[in-house]
Image 1: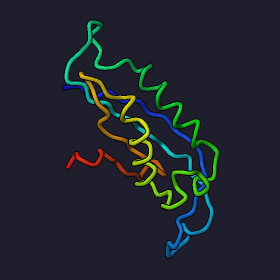
Image 2 (image 1 turned 90 degrees about the horizontal axis):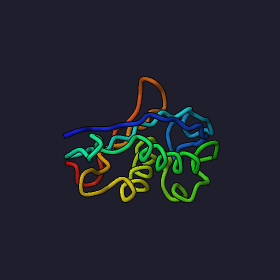
Image 3 (image 1 turned 45 degrees about the horizontal axis):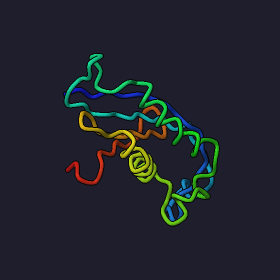
Image 4 (image 1 turned 180 degrees about the vertical axis):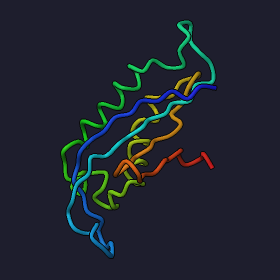
Length: 126
C-alpha cells in the first residue's frame, strides 16, 4: 500500500456565521492543503499515481476557491466555510477523478495555520 500526496495552498477570506467569537468577523487565511491518494499496487512505470495527475485535478479546485470570499462560493451558501467543511468540499470534488482500480482518494488535510488544521478521510473511512 502506498500513500502518495501533494501539498498546495490557497488564499481566501471567510467568516463563520453564528460563531461566538472573533471568527464571526470577516478575515482571511493562507490555507495549506495536503491531498493523499492511496494506491494498492503500482503501474508498469512503478508509480501508484503520477504526481502530475494529482496536481492537475487539485489545481482546478484550488483555482475555484483561491482569492475569493468563501461565504459567497456556492458550496458554502448554506454551511459555514470551516476547515472541516472546506476539506469535505475538496474531497467530494476530487474523489471521482482521483479513483481507479489501483488507487483512491484517501484524505484531505486543510490547515488554517501551520499549527492547526483538520484531516478528512471521507464518509465511510470510520
